[in-house]
Image (cartoon, rainbow, N blue to C red):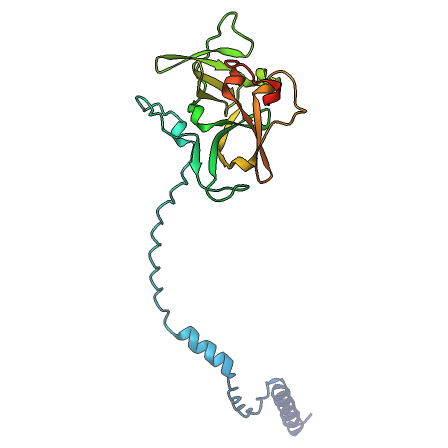
Length: 261
């Protein structure tokens, strides 16, 4: 091979190497045109108002008004039986001058008719009444001492402020079923023809005021032991009260003759 051929081969190899290096080299990318920013989207009016409300500084809470002053408790209505109940802090309870009648008019009576007042109590679920002028006081049952050979309707005796008072069970006189004393059991202390006497009752109700026209005589069909003590039936609207004669109930008075009943 001559010298010229060697130089030509060398030049061809150099050109081929240059082409290979040029092909392997990374080609630069053309410069991209900048993208213009998107125009701002207008905010709806409602969102603008909410944003402005949220940015507003919070107001201090208003001071709470002072609580209203508590109204004074209403006075309880006067209980017509209050004068009869004896309290332990009393030295000696006064005996009120209540009388047996009160002026006025009531259901079944005309103007000017005198009202009759009765203290009512319960026996075996029925309401009974005694003239208020015969009732002295009402007490919770203290210990009752039995009396030997006493009548069947006599429960025993109690001591009230140094005074011995016999206690009677009206259930036995009226032929009612017996019942053990309960939380509402009371002794109604009355003034009988022979002195003070106590009636053991299931509970004390209240005071009723009846005109004479509202009191009917005992029906003639009622009979039996002790029924002579029933002197009438009082009516207050739909309510009936069995009225009793104290002395006949205690057996301290003779019953009236049959034609006078």
